[in-house]
Image (tube, rainbow, N blue to C red; front, top):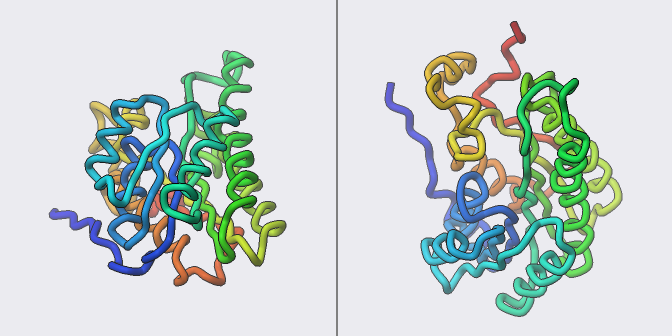
Amino acid sequence: MTVVVPIAGTPGRLEGRVAVVTGSSRGIGFGIAERLVAEGARVVLTARSQEPLAEAVAALGTDVACGVAGKVHDPAHRDETIAAAVDRFGRVDILVNNAGTNPVYGPLSDLDLDAARKILEVNVLGALSWTQRFAEEATEGGAVVNISSVSAFSHAPGIAFYGVSKAALNQLTRSLAAELGPAIRVNAVAPAVVKTRFAAALYEGREEQVAARYPMQRLGVPSDVASAVAYLVSDDASWVTGQVLSVDGGGLTVPSA
């Protein structure tokens, strides 16, 4: 079966908007940045390492993109990135909290608590702190999208605490939407397994078996998530806030074994 995944977007839908996308040198983050640019936005990308970040910016075009390297939980990096958006492009309208971490795999009974604290610091407090800083500079009608996960909705063997952090992120999304409206809308996108390096351990060597769990009979790709994000930050979603949109190939419709 041939799978057609649209990536072109809606040209001009985000014309004049400026976005910050964290964790965007590759994978889902880069796919999101690519889609926003395709729809007319200019984008500031972030990543820990300078070299892949520079490659990502070059791929998008230095006229519409720039990069700021640093750690997502570093306040100085956060301030530098938001300032770069305003200084380079004159404004900031969109924030996509994509950066996340999951440094452990295994049962909760063996979970290292320092690793658990790190997961919460990056996946939950990181999103909160970036949104706080964004809200100080955002133009009226700004939009935030948090990248969550379907692991927030049910037990996810091996990555259960990652799911805990994403469940907290979903509640954070709803609470921020209530507090920041009407000036800023806040939503989240919750993907299932997407073919990226970050998620490789969840499907490598058994992709067909994993894909068979989904009614759509394939794994996600970054553009699947990017198209949902592009909708949520656009005026097409101007009355949508506080929502968590599952992008999962229909996986949540299938009862767990």
